[in-house]
Image 1: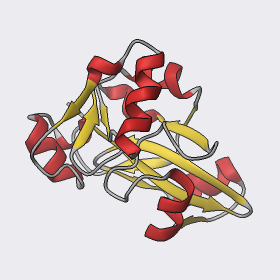
Image 2: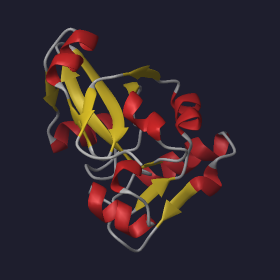
Image 3: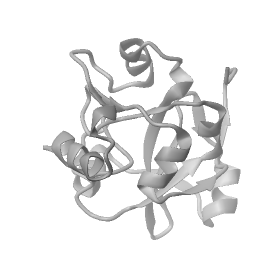
Length: 158
């Protein structure tokens, strides 16, 4: 059902052909990168977080980690990860397959600057075996998300 919402969202924007469904597990950065044949950093992971009273999604490169100081400076509170049941209740999508769009209800979405290091990134497509091929600019356009710098990266961005 969650992939259907993502497909409908993309179809409305003439981007449905960008949805990739695989037989392989794409629920972690490593398995998604292997299944799609891309660098782990190109996987655009969606992190569900709470910042004080706000609930938001931050989409970042696969090798990026939330930087608590940057996050606090941007959102005014320390980040707290939502539990799997909270994520599913908010988005209607399973942890490991949370897309930045196609949710059950409106949710605040932000894109981390780490994504701009690549021509193409792959956010999840609403399930643990799907992804969507988009440029960072397309991702910003379809989500209506703003850009933030709230992570640090571990490796080379290529």
